[in-house]
Image 1 (cartoon, helix red, strand yellow):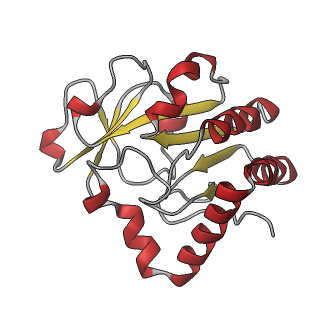
Image 2 (cartoon, helix red, strand yellow; image 1 turned 180 degrees about the vertical axis):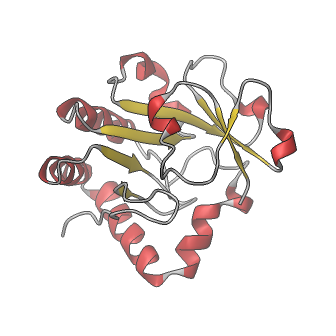
Length: 191
């Protein structure tokens, strides 16, 4: 009973990724739960729902196994890139420490993580391995925490709402990889 890791999707291309259940495996999602794009996929596709529920069960009941399964997958497949949480988010301090362990153990794999779980990363965000690219995910500029200095992933309603200093996501990681390669703030048009 291993975690189910997707080998990619239409937006990410062939970047392996792992998810949990949207909303129920999220903290700090009051501002986005009604517009949660991941919940759309979760409700629409039975295979997605089953995989994310399976991963959620392991993460919530056997966090050590969840960490080991992801580490083993990255090592075995010699991943150069990996993304956590198309759906769901960090659910505990132990998971956060596990994700940092996975990154430290796989220094040639660039790992991307969008998170609203500021409460778990607050006291150790300065000790993030250089290959772990963490972006604070917010739906409103007012939600950006002042006490955590990490790149922002901002969701906006229209291209015209792009704030100064932000780069607009083109909607596909294929050929871009900007979120893996820069500390600049990025904005995503709500979809």
